[in-house]
Picture 1 (cartoon, helix red, strand yellow):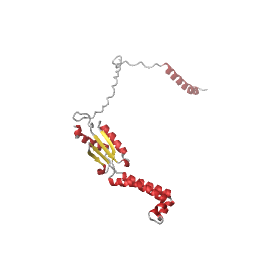
Picture 2 (tube, rainbow, N blue to C red):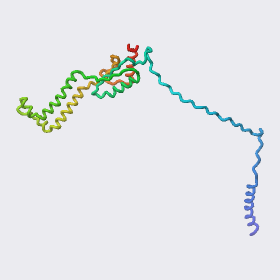
Picture 3 (cartoon, rainbow, N blue to C red):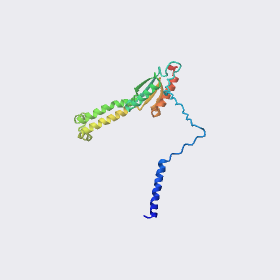
Picture 4 (cartoon, helix red, strand yellow):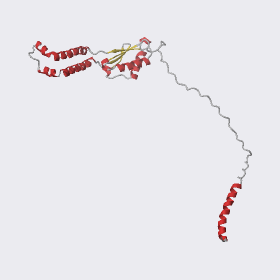
Length: 226
């Protein structure tokens, strides 16, 4: 090897060795002194945790009294007369529970509101029609001659051909008319004998808040609680 090759090979080896030597032997520079002298670290005292207080919930206000005689509803009666055949019982029970909870001591009476007299009389004739049709279909051949007919009419034989279907149709038709004649469509509310709400006049049901306010006004001016 000539001198140029030895120089090119030895120079990188020398530089590598010098870097390794400086890496392990050089010490880090000393820290510079602070202008304010030693640094004192002040630790703040630990914060004391305050005990948590229980949450305060608002209490329900008691029902106000009138004249210092106790609850508003004491001694008063509300009558709810409804149509029992119209499936109004659920609505009446809901209104009853609402009024008893809003006015402690109030007596709520539920009763059926009967239909008018003509409808009641016609409703009593429906079972007569039902059993009369059943007897006519089953024994019309003996009934018509006694009524003065030489032979039963043609429509009798058409009913007789399908007697079970005719009997079932007559029974279902009679039940429909009887249900219609027994329904009054009423939902009448009275407070101490005075009418508060009438479905027959308003053609609608009262709302719970609406009925509560109406009954409350009646109770406020009722002589039984003053």
